[in-house]
Length: 68
Image (cartoon, rainbow, N blue to C red; front, side, top):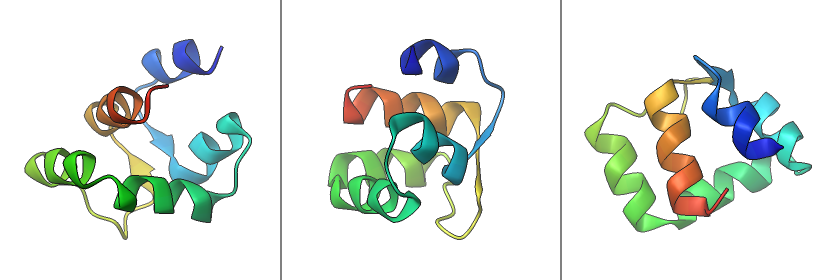
């Protein structure tokens, strides 16, 4: 269910993504920052940790690297 809801989105806030996984936004942040390969790939496409909205490309990478 979570996988499909991410795949079909144009963009999503970090809070909404965390809520869909049933975790706190801070936990999501820790998962992202704690995965060096994911962070490397996110930075390549212009990820900004201070921006609340995740692009479709960012969502796809998060899904791939975190296994969702």
